[in-house]
Length: 371
Image (cartoon, helix red, strand yellow):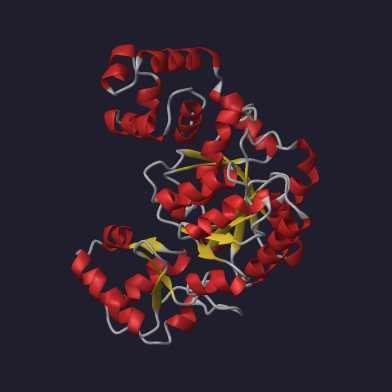
């Protein structure tokens, strides 16, 4: 049995979230050992009695080989935190889901993503704004993340698809289902032109308790969250809250002051969210411009002055990284990395995109390695 199957097995156990999963990985030599551990060892690893009971029941009833075959038959990939293609922005968060189920494809360009979310009961103004904004941002090179819901979410996905860009739909249920069911055809298009993503194992229903984690995942995959039309009580506002907690940018599109459907997004602007009148407002905040981004090879034409600059260019090639992650990756002191980044910013080689995250000044497309 492969190591990946034990990741999937634990993902089926109620009560084993990111924190307890991390404790299990620290307490046992491997997840295989954790899966087969006795109750006393599991308790020593920090699991409570109920979670231990859930695990013992899962060991008795789950056939991990059968689950893997089902995923293969569905054309679904299970990504773990150990996989190199696990989304880089998400991986830096302490609450990153241990397993993601993917139908479609993820690419390095998806590290350059923004989320567009809003009310299910969108007006024509909200739908049209989400559609146009998503399409223009996709044409500028950004991947658009949303939740496949009715209203604003669907309009955003549709705008990207019609513009020929990439979009990711985050589900509040298992990957073997589509929610809402009337969006099955839209989901099929997204899987061909991006990906469907969920942290919930197959067979999970779209219950109300699953929507906050879904919203948290939407913001975790994104550099920022744009709220287009949302009432005062809205899941979109919870997604904006998650974005703020995760150090992401929060944007909002203003609406009529008399519209109940815009009171939440207008309140976000009052509270400090960046006001969005056009795609350029988002691009400027992220230090991006319209047009074809430079490649890593083009950035390298501004000759790296030393080995540190060359290493940083290569490290940022697949997307933004936090300065702490750069230091760990390069095994260099923070003072060296920080001073090198400052000089590279002055030379136009890199840019800071918020929360001590750095990216190539080029943008998302980086096909070549600097020698």
